[in-house]
Length: 433
Image (cartoon, rainbow, N blue to C red; front, side):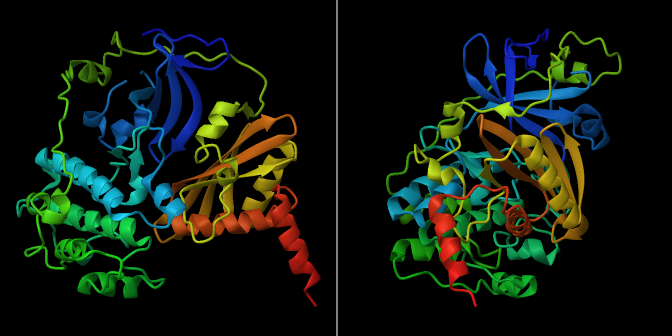
């Protein structure tokens, strides 16, 4: 697989032309890419080979001399979380459809000894046909992680969605714990809010231990009974996935899944990690040098980031939404935006690393889930208009939300406000003493 520079000056890997960064985490970066032979849009996950070897992840991947490239389906429908946020809550038939798909996917994993351990709406993506795709298996457990007692022992997951037995740290059944998270997701889909929520973590855990929640009045009796059987704090009496599939409420309109079995050979993967370094599967990486400038975003890419054709939703202004990524627009030059963000982040106690029109910010103090890390990139939408996109790459999502609010407050002269927002601020200012 030879690599060449594309006509647009970007990097190509084999027959794939790499584009913008879609997401970034501790071990990997995900980029949009296009198959130059078929025109198919895909997502390519790029891992640093040295990190993969260091963390003994070689058995899970394939790829180059310094990087590992994994070609994935490009899912265009966004997160299920965004769908809930835009509608507040879903109708029962729609929620049931998504829940059926979720149970099918989770059951498929469990039958192969894989337990996700961080199921939540943010990790459920939707394709162009509205079909759920379970993502973010970074915390998943494999059969070899099950101890002699037949249980898992690593405490992980998101507090609002995690099963009580996981928090107690005495060993847990991965399948039962995943199903609990599915029950919380079903509640959120139908209610528009979480069954277990509290700003104090210990109080939240007490609610989870006791399954202290109540269903809103619009829940049907059938779904109330099912949710209460799933959110049973005792894993021994909790309903199983097999029993969920036989449940009357669940079965309405249910279609058993069909799965394609891929013909996979690990010979090439083994060759990539061999010490010889002469694998024919290695990708030669080349990139054309060009002056540093913000990535230009065309109209189609811009629309793909918004909900339908409503570009107002591109820049999240709704209150109460806690997302892993957000963005704002600015009429300032890109180099001025970068400098102002760099200064503001440093004042807020963040270590800043700059690479052209990209920033990596890391909090100096550890939070609820370690150090908050944020990747920032500037896109040029027009000669006089830029979009600043921020992704949480590490740490707690709520802490990212607080950081973003503080940052945009510091950047009040940089962040562009709509006419309505400017007028609201002006009116508020006139009323001040």
